[in-house]
Amino acid sequence: MKLDSTALQEALSKLDGWQGNDSGISREFMFPSYADGVAFALKVTLLAEKSNHHPDALTISWKKVKVVYVTHDAGGVTELDLQAASKVNALV
Image (tube, rainbow, N blue to C red):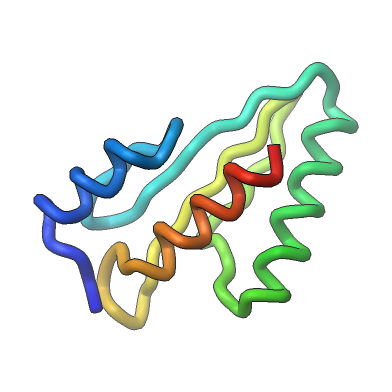
């Protein structure tokens, strides 16, 4: 079930580094090298496969990786997205 704006903002206040709105949540992670960012992105990919909940976007840039979650079937951000974001935070 899609979270309303109030519930989403309350949840994001407890989720280190994540921001967003009804259309999705995101966080940008910084790394000391490009290779470290790629390794992190692979960990996010494996986590997504294991949990069967995939990021909407996983963007690898120079020394940074941006992760975006939204549940398209629900038309916005759900508890699944928040749980996935929390698990991604635990990878760092």
